Image (tube, helix red, strand yellow):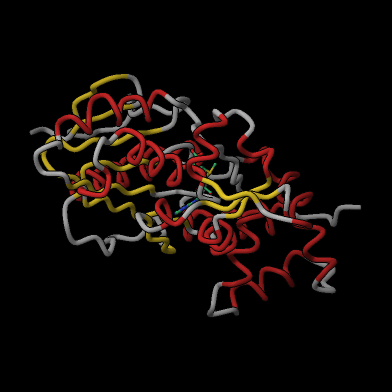
Amino acid sequence: MDFEISTEEFQQFRTLIYEESGISLNDQKQGLVASRLSKRLRELGLSTFSDYYEQLTRDPSQEEFTRMLDLISTNKTDFFREPKHFDFLREEILPQLREEKRIRIWSSACSTGEEPYTIAMTLYDGLSDPAQWDCKILASDLSTRVLAKAAAGVYDAERVQGVPLETVRRHFLRGRGASEHQLKVKPHLSAMIQFRRLNLMDEQFPIKSPLDLIFCRNVMIYFDRPTQERLVNKFYRYLKPGGCLFIGHSESLQWVEHSFTSLAPTIYQKKA
Ligand SMILES: C[S@@+](CC[C@H](N)C(=O)[O-])C[C@H]1O[C@@H](n2cnc3c(N)ncnc32)[C@H](O)[C@@H]1O
């Protein structure tokens, strides 16, 4: 049974979630908030949303806030999700960097890691001499829970069902005994990736050298237009001239003011 959430309580949660994560919940989401958070209230022995709000806002570590956000937001992701972006990386981007042999990529809402590992597989398989290249992928998310899973790099075998068997063999180790249904990402992929908790709402990011690519897929859909606009313009600053931003296939920058050139649907380039 769900606990009752008053409109006032819903407004408190809505404001907190928006201010801390940029996620914008409309009036229709009142029931969703109640149903997704009721179990957590019960676990904590609380009986009102006001008590839970008190607890959340009193916790300086933000641990409970992260937990709450995990319940509200979706972490859905997949290996090779929206594969055109990885084809573009292999066919268009890598040939341009063949001389330099250096690439810097940010997977900025990486969830449980399938996106950055897919990028790493694409680099490894798309380069004839991967050992000669300097490839670095920053993979970040707001949620420490998904980041811990991403950094562990261990997945149930069914998560790679759509990936060609040869690719799986090249990049994953199969568990033994009780873990035989699990796969672990091989070190040649993990070595390219640094995982870090970053909030896309931050004014600045700890990124020193300009980036070739930013992946920001399937998160902006939860942000309102002003938030999307601020974020896209921040991304612009962190890209090299000629660098690209990839957004999710159901997202668009059509209503957002920005300085990117549209290269293909959902692929945007900073002017060279
Ligand atoms: C649906 S997943 C997208 C995963 C991956 N990019 C993909 O397309 O498959 C959205 C992720 O955005 C993260 N997220 C939500 N708000 C965020 C914020 N303000 N800063 C960073 N990450 C955020 C969530 O924790 C979640 O893991």
